Picture 1 (cartoon, rainbow, N blue to C red):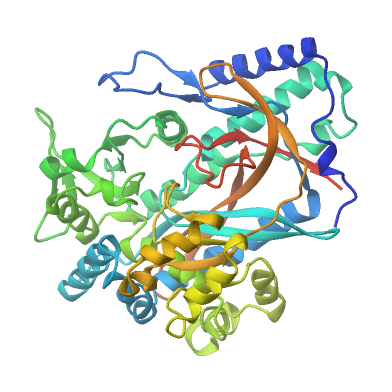
Picture 2: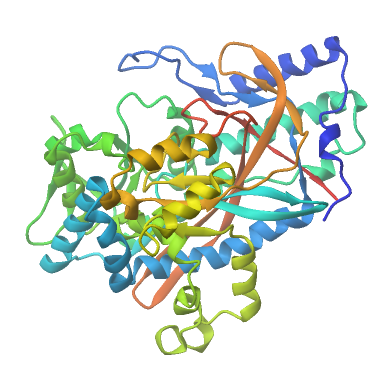
Length: 500
């Protein structure tokens, strides 16, 4: 696909020039809001911040494969919107998972109960991110999907600032002319902040009640505060839409839903109740967010309300790893993208689109496939496999050498909650300088870089109201690290350098 030699990256710099770049990179991050809160307990009102973990050089990425990832997003937007509205499919796939996975079971059974009672808001808002790695076999390099995220798709605003940082280094130093590839024309634009906010604005406008506000549901002690705050600033300064941030603990006391109108309000001390137009979850994707049954009930109150949710419970379930695996089975993709009776002639995708989607997938199978067969295959291929549960947020997967012992300890009844996926093999030899958050410590190491493409859709039964691809993210980690989460400390924020 490309003649670019990844093993010769990054270009050579003198120690003095590298130190100059590092100074400019960290100074840019600190002065442009590319920030984290420090580790440890945080005061109610933040008093200090550190720069987020960043890379010194942008990551080279084939231009055609970047464009391919952007083009795929419009198909994925529709695909996952349709999955979220296919109750029978989700009941079959994720309902079965809920029988052996407590967290999924709580969400699915709660959603089933809400359906029986009757839901008042037909619209769903999805702020998505589809993650990819480069996959090399011989001299051939292709694009392969890692996963599709339907809840709390983070780092959109900080990714925009990371790409701005590398653009600034090019403008101010030209990277000391270390490589002919490091020119402004090879830095793609990244306007993720305004793109994601456009989705939130579309939902707020669809709700269409003057004086209503958008609710951000957040985790207590969130260190990734600034990635969320930049969305709030854009909503307020550009669209005059206020945001309220609340944890599930706070919402359990303050969130109220009218029995007559299903209007969701927050009852604040010494203030008039505030009506909520849109609920945007930056929490709720991990069992740790629901330590008691009260927290689940709070989630179900929000789901039951008239406010537009991002995501709804079915859209969150649609992002399960089991769904990702089932999509690879014969006829499933056709069910969602080629059913003329269900979606009409204009809603059917051409065979080329299906082929492009399938080409972005690695081989996947269920651990409970044909009795012990799925486990047997995973054991035989362990060094080239990753096992994934129904979890988000990083740090949940099982890799390579750890697989046989894990399979020995996994009860047979819990196998259905896991999928096996063939490992992606990124180009070897690619290196970068990784600057750790707030410490100034820089490590030159061989790395793997993951591209995330953002998109959004506002949709309801029988229609996708609106949707588009809206930006991108690059996370880079040491090749020795299996996991890839920035918030969990495995990766740094990076940006793209397009190469031919």
